[in-house]
Length: 236
Image (cartoon, rainbow, N blue to C red; front, side):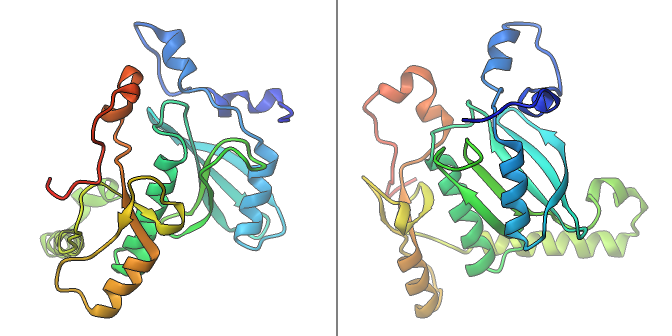
């Protein structure tokens, strides 16, 4: 059972805006209680710190809340808690974590490291969560106008290179990436069909699978009960 602290209520509520219509319902689907102390404990363990000394709400969108947790040794990590309207339970988080690991560890795409995560509510925090590395640096939009043309061109080349690496990866099926250990039902192995090395193909084949999509347009409201194909598909 989660013991609520009144001082943490703003962590659970959506506090970044208002609605002119159906506000109670909009707030309800963005309200998520979790065990703040346990999230702090798990974050500290994940980065091998003694304890977490502060937690602040960093940002929130329509589907997730992001918190910044600071440790006693100065380390900082981010934790993301999905709202009830974030998407299909378990699979939304599981697919996101698997996709990030594929990008970071197998395709050498610069993605923040995931320290800990849970795609089920069977954990000390309560809901699903992801504890992730805080990206260093400054947001590009803050300094873009101060950069000279050569620096801007250099940044654009890096972006194009990253996107090219992503587009160069082709699989035998279309849908969402999952860990092979999480795959159920209609899952198929993640088989690369492009010119990657045999070693890379084998590693990805053993580690990942492709399963049905978690796109909300396939699952929202009554659509979740409709018997339709949600993937994986062999053609787009």
